[in-house]
Image (tube, rainbow, N blue to C red; front, top):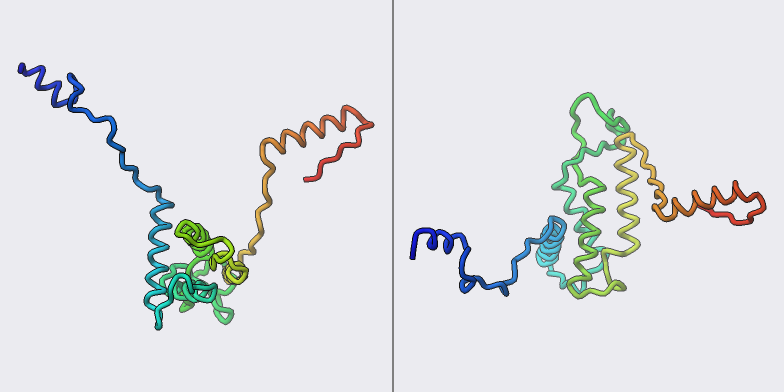
Length: 188
């Protein structure tokens, strides 16, 4: 074998005898999928560490609420208490002793991932403890409390109309101006 043939073989060029095209390529999970798996494992470990341990099939929204409160001790968001002189100030000028908590956005994203993981792991939407109304109420209270403590009112973002809806409404607007007798009205 000449040196050029050896070079081609090392580079995978030349004969196709050594190439197996049927080998599936391993795909790495997305950042979201990896985080969802870590969150799911963390929640499962939390349930196992309860006294007595809680089986996933016995888990309810109270266990989820306890888990969210447990996570507060690892939070990084300063949440001023009402007695703090910096309560309601978005950028306090000095440090204070108010507790660090999990940020509302982090908790909201966590619940979304756990809700999806529950159903991917065999749970039904009807029994999903992460989809409970009590969880939504808790998250709303955390959001409102943190917004007040930082002096930043939370305002729900209005949904922007989709491109198709926007085109339809602009066409409707054009139609109503072009044809004054048109009775077509679109509400947004």
